[in-house]
Amino acid sequence: MLKDFCNKLLEKLKINGRDLTVFLLSFLLAFSIWFIHNLSLDYSSLVSVPVVAESNIDGHSGLSSNAVSIAARCRTTGFNLIRIRHAPGRKSVQVRFAKSDLHYKEGDLYSISSESLGNYVNDIFGDGVSLEAFTSKEVFFRFPSVNHKKVPVQAMRILDFRQQYMAVTDMKLDPDSVIIYGEPFRLAQIDRVRTQTIDLSDIHSSAHGIVRIEKIKGVRISAGEVNYSLDVSRYVEVKDVVPITVRDIPQGKKMAVYPSKATVLFRCIFPLISDPSGKVRFYIDYSDFAASINGRCVPKTGKLPEGVINYVTDPMVFDCVESEK
Image (cartoon, rainbow, N blue to C red; front, side, top):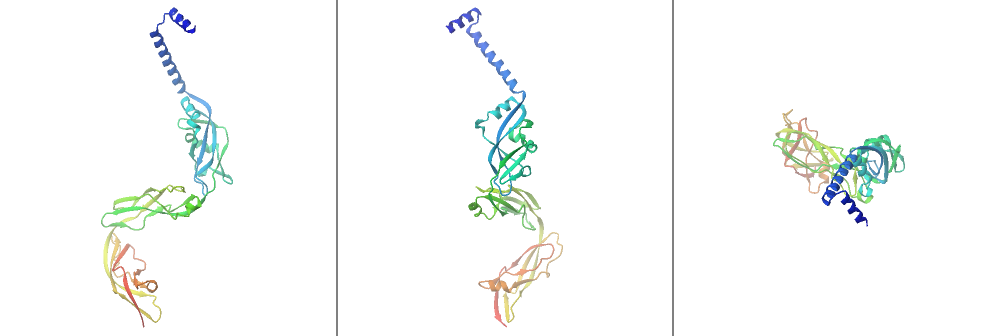
């Protein structure tokens, strides 16, 4: 009956099937333009997003154990309102808050004020959103306590120096130690953390940069990266022949060293500040001999003259023979 009525109406209006199709398509196009236009306009509306907090609080987990619904009146486009309100599954947004913005309350509970939350509007609600006002003056997150300990950072490096260049000192890291957090059985197995490989080639000047720390499964690290610096200098080599003496021999004992002299190659900063030849004394300490298994010892020296980076002796190890006086 309804079908007959529609057919009679179309006949009376003299509208054929082709005209009807064009009319419907035009109507849908006009509606789409109107709908898109309205969604592109700005609106002021109340929105709410569940948030899990991330931070780096000493002695506590890096993530909050609770999700907090943060509500605010915001101004944004209709598209953004649909995105915020109808996000699939309403999955919690993970927002990293600066430690200084979180205030201790009690136990594992920390709060953040609405004034501080204003710095994280785009992190919480997304880009293109302007805050008008939060509905709460502060929100609370719980960061569970975790075990932690301090460990050194070890630089993993591949260094290739240009000829006649070398490091003046060991590579420096800042910070040179970090705090790691995790379950006791995991922490017990870790005595240091390592950087990603610092690969430098053709080094002929001091180097510095930033390198990330290798992540460890199940463990949180207080810093994600460290600064490294390497003091590099051109050097010259100075050769000298020095006697090898003995120190701290007990009364009634004497000790001979074979060979009694060594050829020493000094590496000195260029240009040469002073010639170390004849200024450095090398000796075998009797305590080292007493602690050795086979009487073979490495000679020692006192403070090196200014400008001397390091040295190599030839031979590197000496035979020591003890006898009675």
